[in-house]
Length: 349
Image: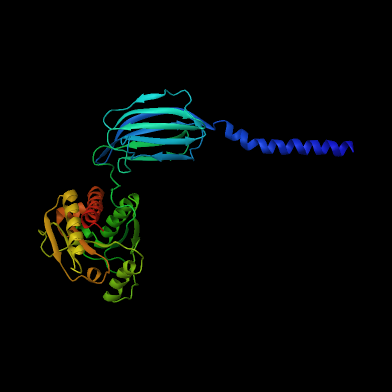
């Protein structure tokens, strides 16, 4: 009996410990701020303020709030089970992108508030985490942007569904230009950059191809190949726009500039083409060849507004080299994304 009684007491103590463990774990913060630094960074043509907050443990649970009505320029980040450690409660920032950053403990949470110079919308900030490295702790990264917001994100696109069609591919190289540059390679590279910007902006992107291949298959007729591309739009629910990306070519090496084509199924097709054209010309700084009606298969047979863009002439020495340049590709992708956003704003759809 004594042995049984002892075992019962032991099991009872074990059960009590197991019951208390979660409560004990929740009672004390599991991480604290161990470092802080901020600096203005330039990446490509983008300049912004990067803030790094080092933490003693992994950062898994946090909530970001911005775009408030009472304090539109205030960004708030709440970290569960965290404390500020020895860091100062208020830290002045660079004044170009940010005003001040404050740490405040509220219950089991650490609240970080950042005063921004522009409204705290998703286009004007970015928050993410980095894992511990050899000489660096776990980090919460806050990036603040100025007027015009961050590149790689465009406001007004969230919730849209867009088909992006990289022209040619597989057995179809498209036009071949300067130094053997192939149209199918350039269209895929630019399309991938467009996809990344759109996805960062909250768009569901459907790519007709994501590698060097024929969409229908290598034995397809032209009509079968083009219809296979159109089918991505017609058979995907709630597609807003079909966008086909190409490079222009001509026998004369002097031909140059950017153009966009559409088929006038509705007034929206021309509106889409014009906004895409405006965005590309603004960012690519090439000759504006305007928008044109055309009977391109993918434009005629898409059930939604559709356009085919010709980025620049792959057969022109200057533009061929630009098309192969990543900075120019990024600019054209940004222009296309902004053109799409302007189209949706203008169409009211």
